[in-house]
Image 1 (cartoon, rainbow, N blue to C red):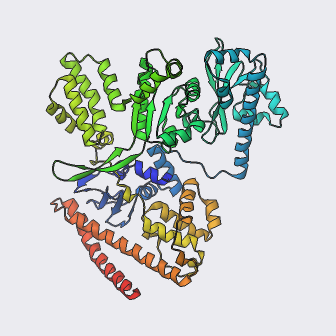
Image 2 (image 1 turned 135 degrees about the horizontal axis):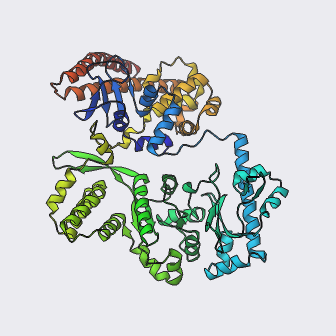
Image 3 (image 1 turned 120 degrees about the vertical axis):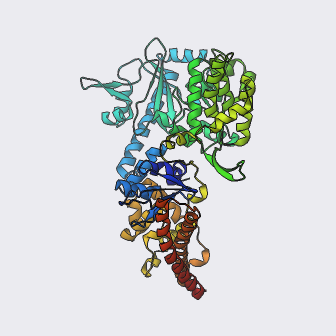
Length: 614
């Protein structure tokens, strides 16, 4: 899924437009006063199933969430992308790294690599590293693990790494940018890590992007990390991900622990799908990379109260960030509703009190195996955690437990799982299942719905079939892969492209007239989409047949025109079916009727042209 598709999959157009327009339900759709021109009767409609909007008044325009933000905020596509990415919690890559920026990053990684070798040498060969070697021996870290994870030791000196790297040709500025040295108030600089056990932190490709360092005496803080930089973001990676990624993919399971030693000991005992969040709560950035490897995640955090709260936070982030799928859910009325259901499995390992994962693995590998096998599903963990903290022996406690757990049950869009946990709650609290179901049905459709309840109603679900536009993509692929088509007088208005990213690429191409020049001008998201179109497979018989290329393009344009007018016909039928007596709605329907006559004429013309071409 591209960045643009990911944004579309996370955002419901009704949510976005509700921030600007007061919407009212109109059958399966929503209507309101157009935000782009003055009117007394609503002619502005939002179509949730197609994730599109259209003004049937004087504007006579429409589009998707990107075109709406572009028009309403008066911004270009790149800025609309940034606004919606922030709203969706999607991280955008910066503009393509320039040659100078790429060289700078390479230098930083090389400096970190040499620093890792420096620290590793001191751990293995220096007298000062003896205390670190003894510590690792007590923690039962094998020599093989020390080498595999390239563990190191930073000498107990203000300057040891700094002069070494300066002699290797690096500047003080480069070392500051890497976070390897620190500038003092007096303008001098010194090594960041001193007298500490050093853990190199690698990205998923195995490049050293930063370091974690543990004090071996009473020095505070106990752990020090490389500072946040363009190269190192603690909230974007996992410790051990470079060594674990293939096993995670093969086993379809990632086990997340907290600390460096947990990962090292786990891998030492052949649990090579274990990674660490490095002592912080999970972030959406971390999950965005992890979910490409697996849909199954098991948390193994501390068993104390803080660890349980951290687990609850991590479950929420995982539930929000892992992939979802559109599933049909039958309703009592006989209708089928499509729900956005979590397409992942989240579990929690309950560790023995006072034990870390590395303690359990070292002391009893069989127990660790059992704990992994018997990890609680996230909802069972939530039940257990909630009911442990509340005294359910009286009515007030039962009421509080129900109020705390019902929102979680409600988030389970799978009707079978929802029914199971409803029955479990009723049985555990010895209260009526019927009453709990009543309370569940009275809840807003989802968390977003609670917000909508104050303004526009509706339910967020985005059918994936409306996220892509194969016909538009096919048309652009023809244009971009066969530049000779540009010479033909193409009657191809940009308005035929309903998807904003396709329309934006088409407009940029019209101005550039050269693919190489176009690629240089695009930001990362549009460049990704362009590369996808350039690599899209086309019929091989087109390759050496210019006449076939032209006729294929002409047919493609004709089909885009037909789609445009058929969409208008569909809108008309949907709104006419409302049979509303609301004067405001009737005005919008009347406008549709006028345009509907024109759509019929255009469709007749298209049918005639297609018949003639055949």
